[in-house]
Length: 582
Ligand SMILES: Cc1cc2nc3c(=O)[nH]c(=O)nc-3n(C[C@H](O)[C@H](O)[C@H](O)COP(=O)(O)OP(=O)(O)OC[C@H]3O[C@@H](n4cnc5c(N)ncnc54)[C@H](O)[C@@H]3O)c2cc1C
Image (tube, helix red, strand yellow):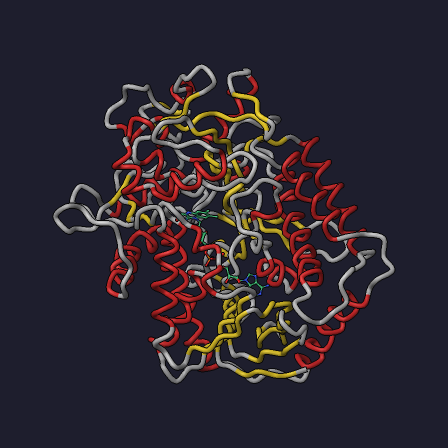
């Protein structure tokens, strides 16, 4: 096995990974940094982000407002010290991106433009038309190219962490093109591998979002925090799950039921005539909007289609000029995928799995419980999102905490101890595991079959609303799939771009991550944010104002423990939108 040596290895070259790499290079150009990514950086999911990134910039706004919106949106499950740090640092990060060349959309006077976003009671979302992530990722990628200390291993699949005596000393990775395993020795490792929306059948997430980095850290002993909180975005295109950004509603789009009625006024999200619009209705938070869809559908007020029930997104009143200027991608997507032109037609939409609030447990410095192991971006849970993330806080999160992970990793690398021989043995075992999987041809199970069973079971049992019964059934299915995974057979035995092999590796990660979601949801007997139990409808602060922590158990269900939430200045209260508590 080849060995590659670097000071800092980063798993993932999306927004968080690139921002971390730049922070390392800026902190100390002598520290070498290696970005290990299973796809070419510009194919990371950050590229797909549409709507924008929130950060206080306008005179009618304040850091306290952004703090309060985020903590309320999180149903008080966010750590308030982390939120405070986040809202303070994000304007500087967004401005830095501007200096690096990010083409933020402008007002006519030349100032940065902001748009409204769900759950944000003031306009503060910076955007670049509806291709914000594309422009941010380009900016970060081109900036990373300026630093000679940043090297890349593109199309290398990170497999296992190497840990000796509670310290992380690197990882193993497989070169996708050749199937060769490599041992990457590093003084510190940052996981920036993105989310895991693919554990659900219907999702906005790209095919690569299979939770690999979460599973790597979890198997190595780091708890996964708040995994039961899975965000459904209210406006996905039926059939494909492609997202229509919240920017559609930010710019003034309406949600209508089958009677063309703005049904959200019936769900504690404010009256239709509420002014300013920002407080109400379509600009309520995502958990509430997705839950309202569920109830409309139970009442028979949604529209049946061959892809399931839908409601309508109405943007016709916005006019062609505004749509072309601010939502050109949305127009393109709606025309291409559901044959509806937002300028003249109602666009069918339905809730779709979009984002994992939970992830690798880190402290405010992006450090995990393993010395020298850091995590940032969607794979991590620091936690600023709590039980429900507000749209446009994630792009900011990956900048702020990606940069922090980089800076703290540099400090750690300066004093890191040398690894013992045990990591060579671990790397050999990791290679052995892959080879055994690769050679297997006699098993009965196929990757696609197990994956389909997993994702539909998650959708059925762990969706917008959950009960003890549905969650138990999903947990049982996962236990069964875990056993059947051992009987997997690969059909492709070549070394070159063996997608069968790396999809098998991804499936292994998906099963572990899904297990933590279902088990944490089963054990949280309350309703909060995106976790809604029909059998425990109320929020229960006395027992569950706590982070869940899922610990790996190779032979059974994850062990769920709990940790305190950091509350500094905002005491839990009712969540109020549009003048109504609900
Ligand atoms: C369609 C869509 C629109 C969105 N719009 C917005 C928005 O407008 N505003 C907002 O704030 N948020 C938005 N989000 C959420 C936000 O875009 C993501 O949470 C964020 O971009 C994640 O960034 P990341 O750097 O953590 O991960 P990603 O960008 O997903 O990058 C992950 C990286 O990890 C690598 N990787 C994964 N596994 C491995 C492995 N095993 N080995 C090696 N490398 C690996 C991948 O190659 C990739 O480079 C949107 C999300 C989606 C899906």
